[in-house]
Length: 108
Length: 120
Image (cartoon, rainbow over all chains, first blue to last red; front, side):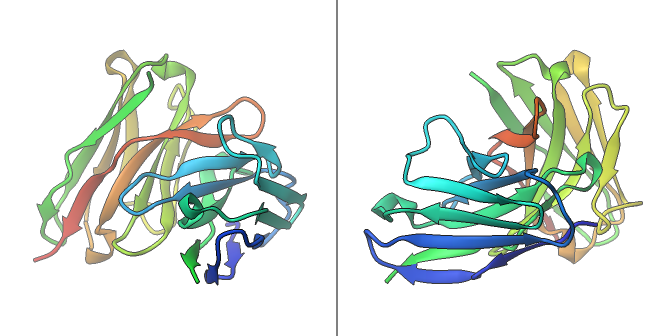
């Protein structure tokens, strides 16, 4: 099975800060990596697919990069609505999809 | 408008069975693979199972393999998860999600979830 490890598990940041979240796969997954945002009481919402492609309607301050085993999600200037939990997810194998443990972004 | 509506969640005793369902609308259901993802209270997302458009490819997480069975009825635009031998650690909100499969797959639509509680 492909294990996904996210770091940090939580962070505190202020509005306007640049935030970077990392995700590491236990084996190479090319760019089969997606990022989701989840707010309390809501279903996850797709932000980035294929490691670096921005989903329609997602603000340009969100960006993704990486390939192989190491990936990053960057929020260039944190906004009040961005305080949420973020998950990476690999779709390299249909029969063994997996998520990272999540990164909770909190207000400093 | 794409809609996924889960149902069937309940409080059940350990060792018992439960089937949860997902009713899909607003898209051609048999064009898409569908998956179940769960989230235990206060915890992260855990992939549970997935099924291809024609039920030809099915996968399960190790934590549910041999106990859970995913299925779909394309005529009824419905996805199912039969859960047997339930354990307290299966307590979670169960989401169904549509897998966009052109190119690199991702979950583009999610339901609101149905809560399964396993407790005596």
